[in-house]
Length: 307
Image 1 (tube, one colour):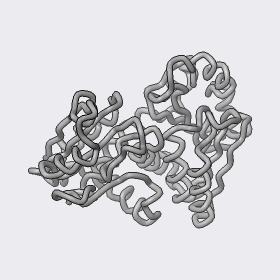
Image 2: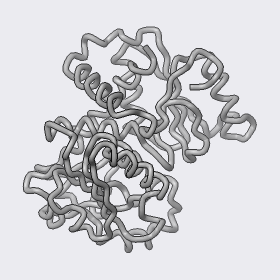
Image 3: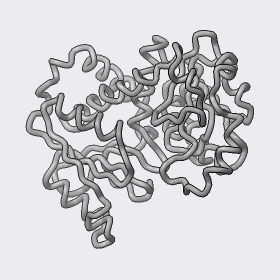
């Protein structure tokens, strides 16, 4: 993670992980999920520090629970009143000091530029832990990853879409993104270009369209996310909701996908905004199985990086 202390592992971005390494982690997550008792002391005596600038429910609870179920311990630290948060210490100095006390560090930050070599618990640019849970969920539901057709609809200039681009392009998943035109809503060009390179190797296809029905047509699964990520100013809400409303996931839009298409959302969800209640609460929703799989993939992440 950092050059000093005992930490020497990280998960910053899925762009750094090869397809075989991703496959290995997913196999490990499946084994842990099926036989949790075999790993209940695997991280006994180990400590994870979780540093938060952004609010968190699933990331905090899933990682804290993962450490507890593996026999380890997690420390939660709010950066707002830390020397780093108060501008009295550099992020690097904070990490160098903390690395002398713990075995791993997770950071959930506003700016990707502040990310140190740690476990990336979310930044404004990427959310690799979420994407790993999504891969496990798709694999469980569909029995495979290569050749799966996933449609993402809504605001695509966000951390979830960016990590999905890396994950799908490396694992042979065909990803179709439906979003409004313009830099505010489309994936970051550098990440899209990077993912196209991975897709050329795996045989997957990536496309960005501005018609939600075209994006969803024939999809095995449909995914959406909030229209107001943490870093978006509140004063942008009205114009963003107006622009994104045609991309709301409704029952009618789901009918453009395959009849048995699954629905995913990384949560928190706002019924009546990016999706209708009858979609997330309906029979095709696997949202809460998806949320659970964060726990299992994060156990695999921790065991892979710390042991």
